[in-house]
Image (cartoon, rainbow, N blue to C red; front, top):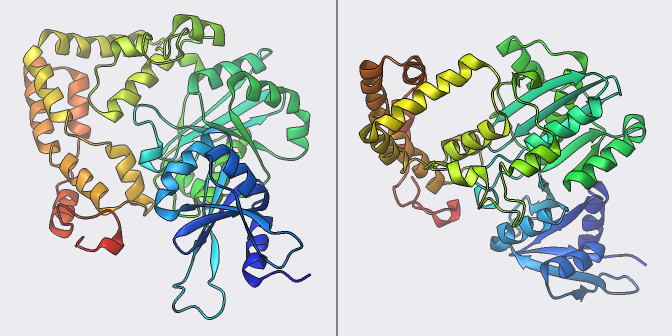
Length: 427
């Protein structure tokens, strides 16, 4: 029995994304069909209906309004599902025949970039593993900030080192190479998945990556074979899911796990560094006690410092000296906090600009944050003159006030601009 042309197009698209729930755009709704509809009806508490499509039985169907997509996707992702968003690529009024549609983005636990779906006080890492019982390389990245790290380790306790690093990084998703290597390492990956309750994606594209080659050339970075493989695997996976530029990833930072205090899983748990054991929440943890930060960027930095305690005595003293200055000088501390209170999450806003997914209101938030930089730099200059502290001097030297970017946004975007282009009143 022949099926309708629209359903034929749906099935062809679904065939390409078998491991995803397909959000299929039909007018002002995203519709789900067949097994996806049954799953979404259960997980999202949606009414399950049906659609006639020339099959023997009506196709199970459920849907959500297009403007509510950011409410529903996080719920599915949190439950361990991938979501492929299929959009209309042409205006239905101008289309000849069936409206062209295609998947424009795949949302997975580790590739979320929408600010409303993210916890602004912690990174959302996605991590890849290359492993062969003798050595291991891991690459991990936060797409929303552009941070990208790589590390390698070996030795008789390789499995323990890997699990301890995963416990430190706590990625939302892990990517491993599909095929023989996955089969050989399945017991380890299965143990990791159960131990940390982390979504593991099997992925087969480990071809050359142009962005990786560009970064290596520009930054003059030397990577081992395994580090190259882990980086390619991760970047290819990110590019396939994002389906847009990821140029916010423009550097690779290598780190040595020996430079940080190695804490095993049980130690991290018993010390209650990031969450209290009883309630499994931040309240009651060491982070909860210490976190007096006023920006999302500061909160993430503090979290990172607690996750990876320093071993280098010089670096420890460097931090202590700065903390001592801020503890003793109440006026300076209050002045800094007052400036930073009105600074938005510039890391994630800049990443949205680079990936061309930023909206007008987010640009205004970026502009308002940039407006504070000259005042911040002047305050740092005053601190440097009074204290002669080298770390404050480094911060002062590195801080670009980005006057040209501020002026461009201020002259181009209306202060109370709407969120969507369709609303108008932006330029």
